[in-house]
Image (tube, rainbow, N blue to C red; front, side, top):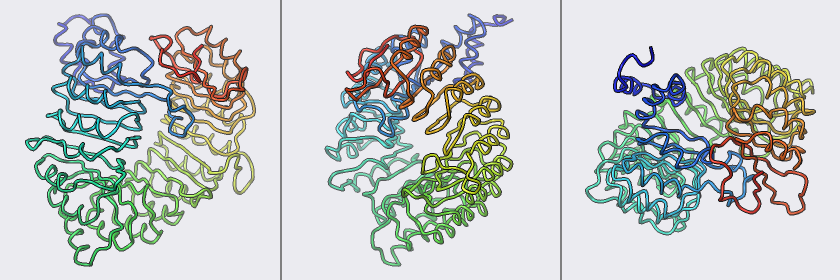
Length: 565
């Protein structure tokens, strides 16, 4: 039945499957479908650049036009991974330049990208349209200049949270005078040593690109410069403003407000660094249509924040600092009834948000799907209330700023709160734990969180049983991140038959020994078991452990502090 119609027809049908999970499932039906999916695949997602080699990729999918790839483990964002750990993109670019000269998109996260790599991209792919670099390092503005000068069809340049060496501003002035295809430009986190952006070149670029929908600016852009840019790009959908600290007259403020008001299509707003309270009112005209608001870099007094958020009735995504407090979150719950995602980031070590803010959000935003919540304190009752009110939550990440914090009221472990989250939220896919937790929490997770894919654990558990509950019960688990937990070798080896079905396991300061890691490596030939010991005195103990499945075998670019078993 699977082969009752020509491969060409099947390939046309498969074009309508866009999720890589669906494409993977199709390839497992039969050999005919495998072949058709192979030739019709245009986009590929690689969650770990060491899970396969570049040769595996080009042999498996001959006609790829878009590649999304991740490199270093997520814990590299917090300084747990050595700077020279690896995840080099250059070998991939070399192979793709030979086999995919038609490549159009490259989206990289936590990769090491050299200027040489960027130069090769600009010279090898004549149809190249989109480059996105997030949390990458190893390159400079000279490398970006290769992209802007040579990629004549470039529509998207996304630079987010990268470690970029600033050498000159030539990358921004490198776009040819005849270039008009830009749709998205994000250099919000690109910093210059001399606080200099060629604003004239940027204005000309924006003016000659009528299809520009996304423009995210860095701190060096002042409000008056922002106003001129907005006058030249009234069709923006996403805007990241520059700094809001310049002294402007009332007339200039009104002109900025009018320029923002003319952006009728604006749906996403971010940036707004160093805002002065008097500037907040300039944002009011665009608030009613916003679906996304990022204030994670903004300090706003609670009263100003509450006034601003009262205009945002269509908001679906909000990122904010915790200094708005519970009163600010109450204002969100009152005004933002369509909210789907909330992230509350910490400003200081003490924290301002509490369980009251979480309860308010759950009562006012019943359609919430994702939450990241940094707070000072929490109670089991608050999480039970949240679970009862927000049944559709798929991502629940709670971060109490002090480790081993108990229920603020009863002084008991927070087991029952997280148990309620796992029991009530049937679609839970990502969970981050915090506070004083016993093995009971992990028993709840294994028993109820059947759709869980990513779990992050720190300073929790009593024994190896916690890890055993997780690995035995969470059948869909793909990523497990653990630090400072007493799981030891028994916990590690509890998943000896599970890890080949997962993408990766990270453990640091978990009482794991070299013998346990060696045993795991011997029993699982499809795993790379990497030990990261930056401390020279560590011989039998394992400081950090990174385990991932691979068909490429041992990598050859690991630094001396990384030992692959």
